[in-house]
Amino acid sequence: TALTILVLALFTNGSTMFIAGVIVALQGLLAAPMAMAGVFQVRVRNDLSIVALTVNSILWTAAVVIIAASGGGLVVYAVALSAIAVLSTALQGLIAFRTVRVPFAGSHRLWRRLAREAIPLSVGTLLIVAYGRIDGLIVYSSAGTSAAGLYNAAYRLVEQIGVVPFSLVTTLMPIATRIGRSP
Image (cartoon, rainbow, N blue to C red; front, side, top):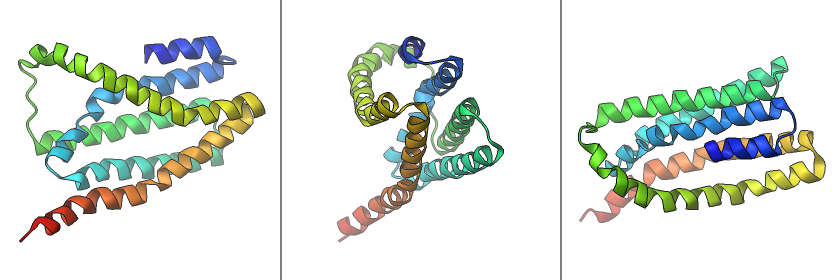
């Protein structure tokens, strides 16, 4: 998050772009609570994870429609995106804590090992995200801010549409696996 804000400070044009970027970059702080999705994967309860994902998609779609209809700007979109991410993460955490008890006492002993294993994974994930978003930078540098905004809005819409097949596969794959294993 700090590195992203530094990059924003170096490369953004104007305060509106910087403020919107910082608001969205602060979503990086949600990474730890978002890891609670692992609770659903371990228990093969992907249907619970899909609930939070579906709520996120519905809220984001509604926010985009409302903001576009009211003529909201870039910062309003960034605030909506971040607020919806916080709500979805809170919902996912609430469901996870109701599903399993997560022990926090004594966990500090595992922090060093966790950091040692998580840092390479995090760097790899950041590289994957960067690779997937470089196209937006190319559009921005060749066609300007307006075209980049439209491109990224369309890209986000395509990502949201992908939730439907992802939801079906995530929910049905454990069921199909169980059926395939049964004697």
